[in-house]
Image (cartoon, rainbow, N blue to C red; front, side, top):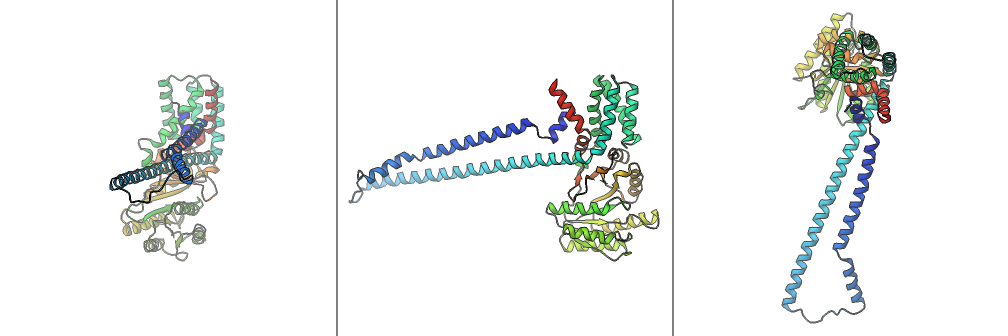
Length: 438
């Protein structure tokens, strides 16, 4: 099966699946009708009606004398058999009803999972519109100018990938793998290279890791989960914290925020406003307070309130870089001391619109705080979404979350397959149309 087809089947409901569901519903309805008819027949309603009619017409006489002992025993046996049969029927009906409910619940869960996948794919497709429009246009123009895949083709493809901020190192590695794959498959048509590019982007992102190992946020199974957010001012750190708090609360978790950015004017008020908007508790001190003290109090407050998750904000700028990094290291030590194994994620927020500048920020912060994951904000606002691959490949840090819009619900867990689908959505649709015509 082609990679484009796999992506489409993974994220988009096809018309065949809808028809199959309708057929299944029809069959279930027919089976249900047959079952009801069978149950009615087993009770012999006609015989009961005949007996009632006979009694009304006086054909059946009720004896006044005592019933002989033999007849009494026969009636007792018949009565017992009827009761057992009725009880068995009731048990069967209850079992069948429970089975039908179980199947219905399973079907509902499958439908919900499909809807969620389609929703995630739609968000990535919409959020990556700027990157896709730029990237797809350049790829299509490149393919249209070449009739065969040669060295010149790969040189121009290299420029296209670099312009999408995939990163020079990553691009060189990818071009080398593409050339090998094209030779192995004996691909001559430039149109076919599109699909190989999409496949290689996913492979480069995951590398030797499995998807479940690097996707999603780590949690503490034995108590309070702590997420430490770091990043320079202006990248959307506080907004991202608010969105994550909303998401976790909607999942039924008890969330607390700690306003550890005591340096920037208005940072505490901004986080407090998010707390009110989302409906979660915020631990704060006055401006200029010791950030480590705020985080310490946040941990104690979260414990006293039996919170599931504590999200800690931190400063993005102090008098100089050394002071900032020392402060972040101190905050991390306080968290480790109070909760062994914490923080469970150190999330660096980067502004996707800054492109390669985000790479230098990632290197600096990862040296001070052992960054475990990247949150890429404002991905919907840039045409250089390839930075995702550069960060993952060159820094070996997975992208955990991405911001795909302004709404409070526009924070998504990063999925490399959904990301590539968002990049190649138009090409995938064109490919399907060509397949149908051929």
